[in-house]
Length: 622
Image (cartoon, rainbow, N blue to C red; front, side):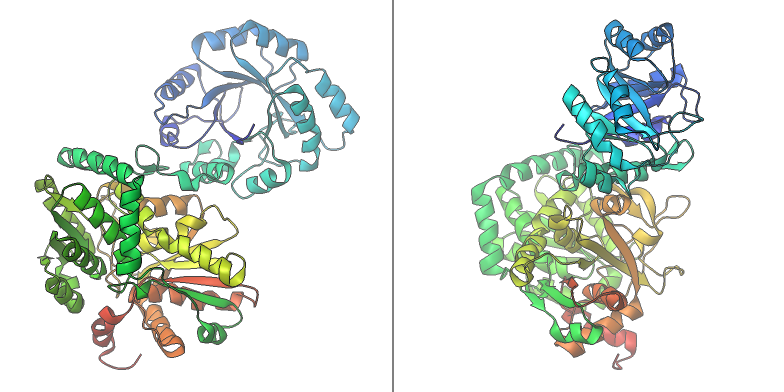
């Protein structure tokens, strides 16, 4: 088997199974033997009916787990429940296995308990008796009470013996016993079984499956983080399209046109030309020598997105979406903005391509980002001040979506972050991945290897996902997203969505967000207008749940101190958003040694924030 199979065993809950519909799970195990995971025939019928409606093109096989049944019990079970596999988990004889195999149109898997102290010749003699009688073998930790399902591992050094026998028989070998997301990668690396079986390792309490743990386990095995979203726009349980019917056709059209032009060499060439000749890519990966020496021993590199035309990473996405809009025949564009960088980038591209432009910006942000408001107006854009809600980025996004609903025929929405309904999170990620692609090439050229850790600030998450995406499969590279703790995560004044948020629907997709017990969106707070947002992109939500990216909060004060440090050591004034990532590096620097290589995504420059910093400090030096 080229792809390690995943079997989730002991499933009971219909809603958990529905939540798994977008995961590449190969087998669903239903336990019919006496156990805390036992299902009734009625439950099994309901669960297998869900599998019939599986829509993602990867329908798992259903496995019935039984212990020491007789042939009539098997017959009754298969008459009532449609199963693909019968797993015999007791002391069934080879003759009984053969009888089941020959009597019913199902595969037969045999579970074998691994007991310490057995000699290899004893094991081989037992296995040989099952030659030709079974279609798969599962090895599990010996449990004198239940026979298996103990949640404990066994000595994996015996696996090669079982694997050699299974390979000789042409059948798959599954390994069970105490597996979870923390140890399954070691098992796969050292022993390469054909499949893995997990039960207690993906439970929040005995017998209760946890979808986040299931997702994390599956990702550790399948390593398919870079093939998402699926065709429904889902990243695991996150993403999707939660929009009014009037927008659905526009989003479907956008997805179709994006897929068409993404494969069009002429489109790719135009975008590449503008990114290089107009925006100034590629941006440098700069070794911050004085900052590195100040903080300790690690070598710290800055990915200088602040050197892009308009001063931030936002231009990468704005150029690509602007070209897409023009090729789709749209002559008007709209955008939402918080710090103003995406608004400026969109207004810039609109002027370049001859498009009419409206930018929605919260009233609070127009006050603290007056320079960017004036820049947008100079570029010919109409800046619409949003006075609803908290009058920040969240409300600007809401108003932009409302406007688009009424003007969808001739207007293209240039969404600025990796948020919103599908296909926007995917599109923005792919248009921003140039950050990580360049970084990968540049660090290999500079150091001959990949970095130990990469840091990026995160609000909605476009610069972070653009930086992280090309490194997702490189699990030796730690990825850290840094969000805004404002005045502290224990206060009401923060934007720490990953640290304090819960799952819900916000601005067209399922993600983590700050909400109260009634599902009402809470106001966010950050000194940084670009991080002052109560949601986050669905792919980031997914990466949090599968534990591929760690998300940490940084306070306003910590960010300001880090901004000052970078100013004084490197002569670079970073955006307040970027300063949050620098602050986390400052925190973690004592942990590193001279062999560590660190990369920070410096997402933008700080010109726009000078007035806000002066107001915060009363005009005094930091």
